[in-house]
Length: 405
Image (cartoon, rainbow, N blue to C red; front, top):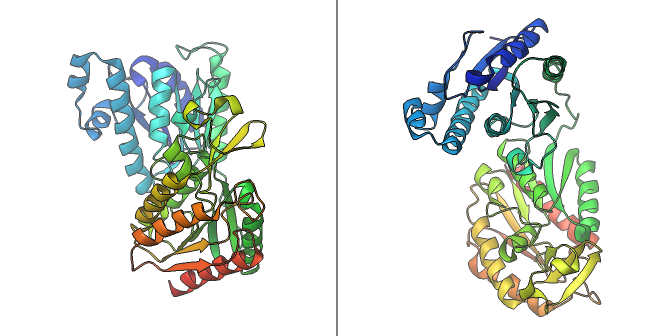
């Protein structure tokens, strides 16, 4: 069976517009699987493959329950979660080559929730009234395209019809694109970076590319870390060189670059080879100086850019970061090694740098060593994180893990 375009939406109130979208996709020569997420009913305008009762059941509810409660927010949440389960099942069965949805506030939320189950590379498009709003939380780290509906999706008219036709053309064209191999025989490696670790990451990238690896760098700004973790979970990478784990510090101190509590967990659970470095754990990121929380106003602060204020982590924070770092790494089910750059964690944590405080770094290192499992190798290097010798060390360590695997 050839994979199809998945059409997801509230067919109870918007059956006519979804009928138009379905017809436009079929006219392009693609097959369609339809999923109804509307709790008020269904449509007879076209064949519904998976109706709303099945979607609700996938989230452990019944339609009768949702209708009786008359709680719109609950209904949207349930149908979004249920749709995500259904979509995941279809993806795992190899039945989906692209996903398209339409909606206003509720329909958009449900469609984007469902698209969270779709891995990177399978096109995802949502024609929505909310395209101009900040939907970063709903989109997350997924490669979802938002297309503005201009008018409300409340019936067919001379404005919405051509946009529906364009949405159909877009999802069909994207779904027809064949993945092109990068042409590297060795594999793909994820690497985390920051401005303060750029020298290290650039050198590591060069060394790995010479070994035939494709290297993809992720800026450790919160979104970057989450995206890297998401792609690791999707099986996109063969190994991880996590040079810049600074997002842990922002998670601890409510900085602007937190990647959430699950940072470092994807590689640990995936079991792929990983070399992990506590890069830039000497700093927490805030915005403009006047945005630094009041409790931190008297701390050691440095203006990295007009809109980026860095705060030096203190002794208590470094101790806690060391514990958290080790506890996360301890959950690794695959080959992993921790490497400590004893002469500095960042560009400004070098001798003469504004954050150079060896005793604070020592607190971090000791906490990591005290809490790291005895079964996980730990390498202590006398180098600074941006020294070429350190880059060579971590690359050699990662390649050894890959070869052993």
